Each structure stands twice: as C-alpha cells, then as structure tokens.
Figure 1 (cartoon, rainbow, N blue to C red):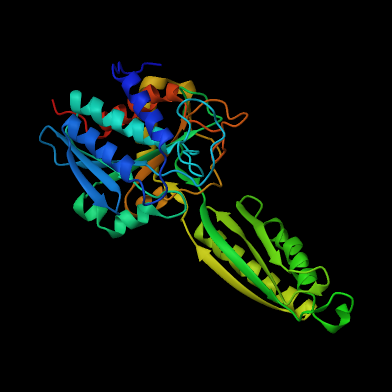
Figure 2 (figure 1 turned 120 degrees about the vertical axis):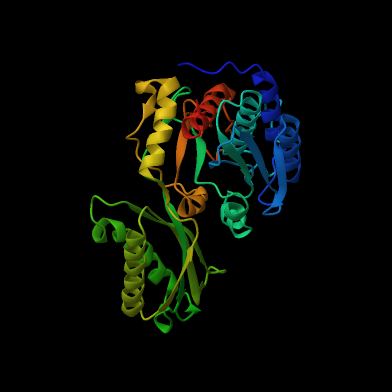
Length: 388
C-alpha cells in the first residue's frame, strides 16, 4: 500500500472528531457547512454556499484544461442517541453521526487541501458537500437547485465507509451497488365489534395478520430466483382496547430492489395479494406506495477508472470488484441518474460489536483517512491527467 504523505492528518482527525461531537440533522447542518466553507476558503478554493440551504460547493482549478469532475460527500447525522463514551461523543442528545458522514466530510476536505497544495492535475474539481442524505433526499434538492447547471461536471463520484471491509481495502463494482427504496402503507378496513362477538364484525386484525404472512411470498414466489428484492413489514398499528375488534389496521414497510422492472413486479404482486385477502375476509384494503431513492447504479467505464485509481496504490488483492451490492439505499443515486459516475466503499475495519452503520456505538475509523484521501487524489489525477 503506497499512501500519500499527508502531514496534516492529525489536524484532520481532530476536525473529524469535532464534527462527530456536533452532529446536525438534515438541512440543519449550518455549523458543519460553516466549517466546510471556512476550510475550503483557507485552502484557496472558490466557495459557493447555500445550495439546497446548507450545501457547500468548492471549486479548484489547475492547468488550462476545460474538463470538470465532481466529488461528493454527505454531511448530515442521524436522529439517534449515541451510546459511546469516548471524548468526542455527541454533545446533542438524540442526534449522532452513526453513518460516518463526519468522516466523509473530513476525507473530502483532506483531498481538497492536498490537491490545493499539490495541483498535479489539469482541469476543475468540484467538491460537493451535500446536506440531508439520510431519508430527506438532499442530492435531489441540490439538483433541483441547479447543481449541475451551475457546475457542469462530466462525471461525479462518491464513497461510503464500509464496516466489514478492512482498513486499506475498497470495493468498487460496476452496475447496481445500492438498492432503490420504496415505502408502502396498507390500510385494512373491516367492521369493528365487541371482541366477545366477532361474528358481528369483520376482523381487521385477522385480515392484516394474514396479509403479513402472504407478503412473504412476493419475492419467494413471484420473482426470478436470480433477481433480488426485499419486502419487509416494519409497522403494524391497530386497536386501543382489550375488548374491541378494531375497525382499522395499518401495515407499513419497505421495498428494496435494484431494477425498475423488479420494483414494478413487486408492487403489482402486493396489490394482487391485498385484493385477494380483502375478498377472502370481507375487508377493504387500500394500498399506497411512496417511492423514495432510486437504485445507485455505477456506470462501467467510470467504475473501471475508479478501480485503476485504487489499484495504483492499494494493489490487486486489496480492491474487491465482485462484492455483493447492498440493500441499503443512498441518495447519490439521483446524481448518478444525471451523470455517469461511480460510488465506492472504503474499508472502515471490522463490523463487529457496535461498529456497524446506524448503530448507537458506531464511530468512523480515523485510520481510513489517509486511504480515502489518497483514493480521491489518485482518482482526480486519473481523470484529469496533467498535460505534458
């Protein structure tokens, strides 16, 4: 492994831990955005603030080339109470960096600083610091605000730390890497009655319970075995008393898939099951789908470019190209629908104990900082080679 010599690593780790100690939720990343803008200005970049409310964009130009590429980091935290006790634990109850966005922000700042000090490339790098990745679609909001019109990059790149992959290794795959996500709500309406006289009503609890079981067949018996999807019921709400069969029951859950045609098949299968269960039990079932993030799909040429950049300093055995994609979702998908690009996973170390994403014991591994910075710098040099 041939990492760059980065003399400011200790300073960057301190900044990362400060961000961890002061997490901010979607579209409220004001302190984080101010720090990012301050640092970028200190490095000599052209800075643009306020895109999608708290988004920050930094421009760094070198040479005379007209090509422009984008590198993106997310900044927001999660509504989760931290259970770590180390000195840089969250100072904000009910809010923590449980997904490593503090690390992603520090990595991209580190890359901006290194490239500003060593401008060994030809063109323009757009450093995109995005708000609201967690559930609020900040990437889509930045695009609606004109991100790619103001900064017309030819391709765009992102990364995520990945517990379970050793530090010093990466996973870079073409095609789907993260799933699309869709929420569903199934409203079951029957006829409420006395629990001691069930024959007088239509039991929504029984109908909804049968529906929970039937939904397990959607992927098992409707989807081609070589395709992938997940249907999970995550909420079941009904009733308020021991002696009343309730009038209504509501089921909610999530669908994950990698292809639009698979998503469509799953939705039609759920609708068909609801119709059948409603008929069987004499109930009415309303179906609502809430489409959220699309699948994150890497374009093959850009994935190969990222792979070459990583191989150059990590070596063949440290770059996974056949890792299974994740059923987790990622709003970088919106950017990849607009531009070619690639989203990679950066090893964060063992995913044991509490060091897993969205866990109250999680913390970004600062040992990954030099690896991630080196990757970003090598990728820029690969994409925007300096002219002889």
